[in-house]
Length: 121
Length: 284
Image (cartoon, rainbow over all chains, first blue to last red; front, top):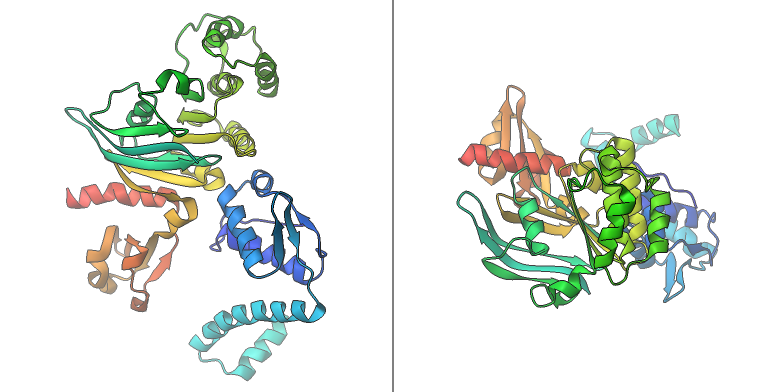
């Protein structure tokens, strides 16, 4: 599992953790059954507070990406290809809604936005 | 379970008052206690150790009332106050031999482990220790008698960035098993941004807010607006600064109307503290 935290970013740290781990799960880099490090250990290693990690793990669980076995830890959930695709699209769409409203504030049409996107992609 | 439960404590001095201070620290977590110089951090901490008698209020430590169980509870509390300014010509070894007699659960093996880990030489005299080493020595003592609650007054002040970073790492390792809880006061807020789970902010002897760190910060927004927007929001601001480019101000998130199109960002702990201090200047 790879995580890089930015302390200067406006995105809350728990959100950064959540986004990075969920991306790795949805790309299949973390296989189902993969055991996440214990919350307190992860907090020490990542140099963030315990509650921050707890929140990120809770968020992952709420999205059905991991599950908890009491006394054992948190594991990556088994997702079918379809489920993974669906969850991935949900997350991408959420971001796109935000991005789109920004483009719209400049009066861009869909075609114009698409052309620009093609240039940077 | 609560490691520390401070309930409505008050203390009156001629020129300073601790007013109805309450906060709770859950077992196994780190709480940062912040406030400007003279805000009451040390006074509050001293009351928790019963070094100052309260006018009113109650303090519970690990579920027990402090005044009724003081002797017993002191075995479970490790505290460090700035400097060790007693017996400074004494060697570490000699001082430890005196201190350890007070503790029932003194663990020599743990003590030597911490000395090694903190790179402390027990044949050094207290006077020869650097500020950082003194803090570490204090911690080594606190940890070797099996303290469950560490109460540290400005443990990081006077330390260089590397030593501070090391110390914060130690704090995080200590709470890792969920058994030890730490309350530490500081005015170096970046220390807390890294490792604290909870923040308690004291200002002029009163608690402004005590909450989980991200929630604490999320309570406030830092605004950056044009002069023409200022009158629209002036009365909601906690405090502000005006200059020829416009204004910046701190506001409670709940009071902020985002339809005003004023640029808002999430403040740092330091910015929150600065604006609260400004509030005094503005309102006298």
